[in-house]
Structure formats: C-alpha cells, structure tokens
Image (cartoon, rainbow, N blue to C red; front, side, top):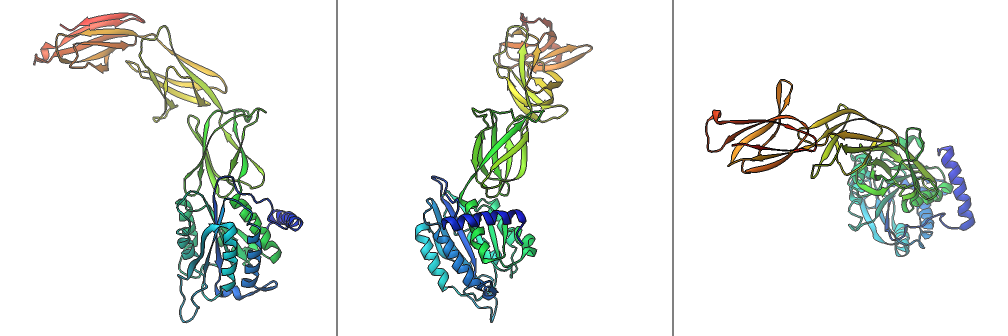
Length: 463
C-alpha cells in the first residue's frame, strides 16, 4: 500500500487535478530538453483483470489521457518502448521481445503517435525487463538533455536478466537519471524487488494511476530549490564564498557547480536543482568536506547542512622579504599528504583544526600543531632571510650545509655550470664544500664557513 505521507500527497494532487483538468504543476525548465521514455509492459499477464477492466485496457486508457495533459509543455520529448507484445509465450519464450515503437519527438506530435500505437498492441509474451532497459540506452539521442525512464509494469523479471544491475549501469554511465517504476497491481511486497531498478510506486487503483504519473513526470521535468547551509562551530550557517559541486551519486558525473553565496537577506542563497536521483555534495574547503546520498524532495524548499567551520591562515616574514617567491606546504596535523601550497602573498581559509606548516625556505622551516580557530586569523612568522653570493673561477660541484650542533644538515647543491650564484638563506651558521671540475682529487675540496644574518648579504669566493 502507499505510505500515509504519499497518500496525503496523492489526495491533494487529485483534488487539484479535478479542479484544473490538467497535470498539476508541470513546467519544463526553460531552454533545457527533457526526454521521457515510457517503457510499457505488454506481456501476457497484462490480460489480468484489474479495477474496471483488464490491466492492459486500463493502463492504455489512463496513460493516453495523461499524455494529453503534456501537450502544452515546451522543451519536452517523449517516446514509447514496449515489451512482451510481439512473440507469444508458446511454443517458446522470447527474452528479447522488446521494441522502440515510437522514437523520440516533440511532445505535441508524439502524444498522438503513442496513443495510436498503444491501441494496436496486444499482450502476448514474457517480461524481459532487464533486456528492455539495456536496449533503452540506444533510444535516447546523443545530444544534451535530461533523460528519464518511466516504466509501467505488472510483473517482475521473467528472464535471466538482472534489471537492477542494468539500471545501475545506465545511471553510472550517465545515460539516464534514476528510473521511475510504476507497479500496476503488483502489491507493496514487490517494493524492495523493484526499488533497486528505480523509484518504485505501487499503483493500487485507477484513481491513483494518473496521480502518480503526474507526480513522476513532475519530478522528471521540474527542478526544485535548495539551500546549502555551511555551518560554523556553533551550527550557524555563516560560512560562504566557497565552491561546491553536486555529483550524481550513481554515475559520479558532475551535475552542478556553484560558488556559495550569502544573499542580501543574510541567508545562504537559493539554487535550482533537479530533484530526480541522488547526489553527493563536495564543498571545496581546505580540506574538502562532502555529504553523500542526498535525496531532494520535489515541490518544496530543501536545506542541506554541512559542517564547514573555517578560520584563516596568514604567513609573515619578520622584516623585508628577500624572496622572489615563497610558498608553504599545509598538512593536517600528523598527516603526510599535502592539502595545499600557500603563497606568502595569499591569506587562505582552512577548516577549524590543527595543521603542520612547512616553509619552502633554505633550509626548510617546519612549524607543527598550528591552530586554526573559527573566524580568526592565525599568523605564522619566520625570520628575515639573508643573501649569500658565491663566486667560482670555473665549473665544479658543491653543496651548502647548515651547522646544527655537532652535525651538518644538507641545505642545497650548487649549480655546477654557474660561476656566480645568489642564494637566499635563513639566518644561521653554514659551510660550503666545493671541488673544481678540473681537480680530480678529494683533497682538492674547498671548504668555506660563514654566517648568515637577517637581512644581510655575504660573499664567499671558492678560489
């Protein structure tokens, strides 16, 4: 049976239907083509009695009446595929009995073509749902559009196919959105079995048939509104100015990209999102945060809340900047992976938490356990560097080492081919070890010891 919540929705929609005589709330998105493929069960079981007649007769009549209400809609194309209608069950079962009876075309034209074709179809064969879904992938044009399948059936898979796997593959490949499955007199016991194919509706009466069709098509052609709340540590939706991407949960395809905004009323801005299918939302903070399996309710304003509390990190040099460009590697505390490479000229936002910062100076400076707090700027300073000028008479190999207590720590290698180099170094005591290219003995190594002072220049001659 239909859930109480769905039943209330059906009753409301039915009342509106009776007042207007048309599909309620249907409106195509401007400039975007929506394609709906109706897959119609014409297998032998559709001869079964249901309500005022056979299932096939009732389904044909109600579908035809509903299609008439779609004629005024712009940017909508429809098509009809049937299965189980060409080969009788005897003497053998044909599990490939499916055919695209009416290819895609403008709704105003194809409504009459589909209604006419339905009248000539007789239920004779089996129920190859999986095969029909697989063949439906070729029914949709290659041009851009929103592709939707609406399947009307009174039975379950009767061949060896796996309709759930086929449907999932179509969604993952981005061929179609999650299909809609209308079970004609199937019973709620089949909800789990059919629900893996798509969004399942158990049609229990003629009265609910067109109402559910209306709801389904309304979801298929309309978008709904969404508000993304980026929450701070107090759960207030004040975070903003960050990119966010909506991915199709099944296929992984990128569906929407938006830069989050707070509107002039001080609220997260409202965006239009297709309510069909499920989404995975990635908010491109540093590091990114995501929320999976987001299912939107059509016809209402949806709110998606994501914890995205942020603070700011600024990098500073004590004194004048001797670097042409300087960057720092930002990592989560205790983790090896680099989250971001921050330039000294930039101030960046990060999620609230602890971070390790490695400055790409010579030698490297590492500062751990840096705290990023909500809506506050954390400033990290490093000493002013000095400049070392190295002069050589010719080519040769050499390196610079920092004197760290009783050990030497490698800082960098000299450039063999240059006879003069300028190197920006942090303050400290250093040594240069150098050997000319023309001298082949280790004892020909030249060593120079020197000190770098903040903001000062020093010159070392290696001859």
